[in-house]
Amino acid sequence: MATPSFSCRELVARAPVRLFPPQARQSLRTRSCQVGFKNQSWAVMEFYENFISKVQSAPTWPDDSERILVEPYTYLASVPGKEVRSALMDAFNAWIQVPAEDLAVVKKLVEMLHTASLL
Image (cartoon, rainbow, N blue to C red; front, side):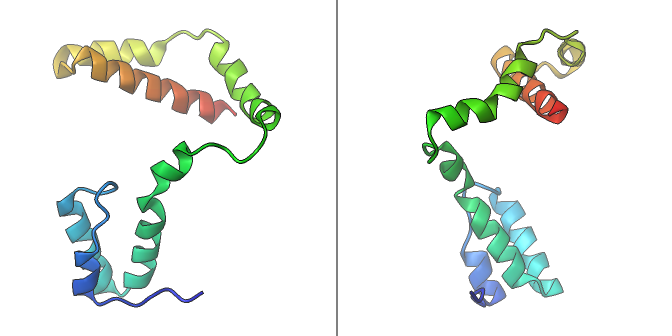
């Protein structure tokens, strides 16, 4: 299937709202047009535009398959660690002073990324 061809002006007008802030969209699309990658860049951005909704939708496989797929991650996440990353974040937070709720989200995200990297 051929990727539709858009002018640079049309690309800038078609702005994915959720993925990039306005300044980044403008900069990315202008740069893409200048170097001749407008079709590829637009196709990639269009694919990721609805990525969150695609991931959040209900899985199309049975619960048994879901359990089998998630079991290695669940096991690794259940094994207690030394919490070095969390301690470092707490130490740096003395200077940065991120609100506690936001810091908890960042800690959980880092923990999940670390666990996933062990798989």
